[in-house]
Length: 403
Image 1 (cartoon, rainbow, N blue to C red):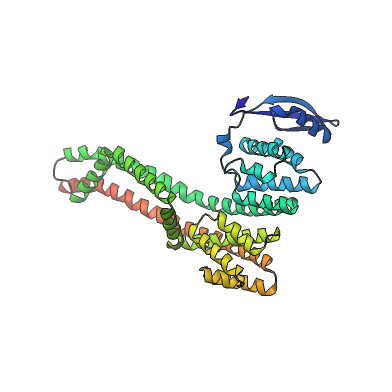
Image 2 (cartoon, helix red, strand yellow; image 1 turned 30 degrees about the vertical axis):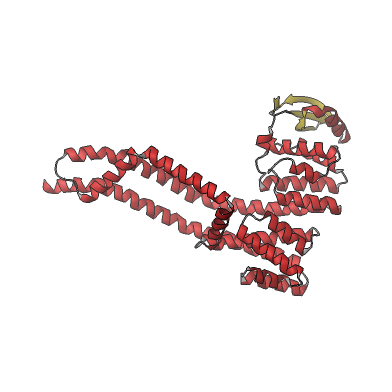
């Protein structure tokens, strides 16, 4: 089946002992598939047309778990002596995710035509992170691509573990918020306004509190389309603003200075800096080149400038700890660990330990904040629902008292 100019098919192969092997391949590369299978001791049994993957779908960013698996497979294949072109082919034909399969297939074509692997990765838009591409490029330049992939597999594995931990902790608060929001919306838009005519028909003047709540609910219900359009407009304007240089800088600054969240954001930036520097150092990058690379891929403009200033100070002969301090990174624990690592001549190991420390700290902070968030959400929603119920009950109680 063709989609976006790409033909993806599923194959089934069998070896002399009857063991089966399944995977995906580009329908145009059937001869290459047969050659690779024969090399592994398999014989092509059958093929089936599968879903093609257009370039638009392939542009979706790869997840940390997917990148970790790709890197682990590439490391094992390259370490076993398989050349880069065959290794890419084996990985993408066994890949179940269609967009990753498509992206690696395009990279394989690029490598087969004589281009470096990192250029093939860049052809797939933003599916592969800049850090991943730069590391692959360095591995090709130094001839240590297998080591690079091994380091990257551990790096993305840790990223995936942290992401899954935070996401798991968010499930309960998110469920509480969504259910409460649905209940409040239903009461404000349908239940409470429905009581207005009934209460008015009972005679007498409604209490001021009840009148105010009724008026608010009716106003929201009558102007729901306008309110929704206003919210969407504000959101779109905000998204446009933060895409501008000034807007992005202001927003990044607020994220780092915000109460509670700012502390977690600063620690997350330091954790990422330590983990990336440790991975780069272990892969053979020197300090200045590592910082220049990390500055180029940093998502926070404020922190990016601090990294750039640190690289400038180091290039002038300053120590790493002093450079970070002068650049505006004032976390005492971070500076202390970096200084200790420099003095002991084990900066790479110390950065790795610092990354572990901050990752655990972030997990602790996320658990703490989410533990506080749960009762806060419940209390806020209880107050809103209680207010709506009281607005209905007050006139009923007043009528009962008069009887």
